[in-house]
Length: 405
Image 1 (spheres, rainbow, N blue to C red):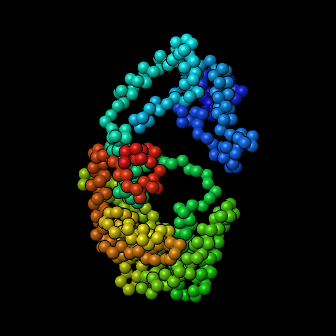
Image 2: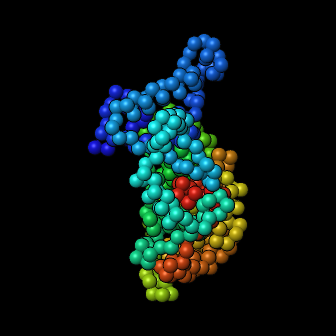
Image 3: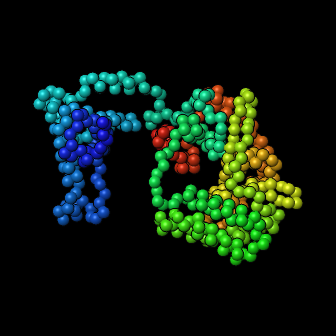
């Protein structure tokens, strides 16, 4: 079997062969480990273990591993961003000893020429930092025929992000976390509001106190499991509870304008035929749909746990954020209005889309058709490198934006 282990965990173990990876000066013996109490000088005066002890332990583990193993191959990255990356001083001393005593540099005579040849074959024109901005093409058969609203948003935000997520189908590993993050918080607010409005499509028959009490009870129920696992999640609940009276006020103003809750968490899909005759299926879930009885108008609403200022920026430029037009397209019928509902920790505010939502929805349909014809025919999908997009993107290690931007 192949065993992946650390240097410290190799003590008193025997192996048929050992491959030491990343044996450069940065990683072996490694940087000084942070200590909870006292700096290195104070620890030395008190006789506590310090940096010198760490280095000595690494040396002992390494030398014992070499002595107990017949075959050891050491590798490291010789250059990094165009600069020399030095071999670990522990192996440099061993190499110097062999060179002086036996005239042998310890370089592997079989593997070294192969590595050099592969490096020359792989050389490509690069930027000054040594890395090119990725701009891959997708084979036509790998282009997805079913597209979610979030996938289309990813394509508009950064084509490379779309390529990695939906063509290569790469996903960040799920992390087991007991802490509630903002995305989880938003999902729970969606659930609370959906359950509340299913039970109370209109607040006209409820007093303000009764509506608030109903929301409070639902909130306690939805947050109960996460608070039982992590009491710190109570802070997220408290943040939402501070907004409940403001949400009640907003909902009553909304109803005074003639709007009432029609449906929530609505699953929809629509088929789009591209100019080249391809058929693409767009699907998604609409947070909320409101109706107005007097003219049978429909409005789509998207809940956001973001500040109004940030949402205003999203809607300031056509095509910057396509979520609301996609919702309108998915609804499948006339849509008179669309808005983000900001559920920020300060207030509850409508952020309406001021432009004609029907025109924008038709534009989305046409643009999707043209884009997917081009992608299927081999159009490049470059990384954009936009700060606001990259900040929350899990593909940074793949596109290596820090090395080419």
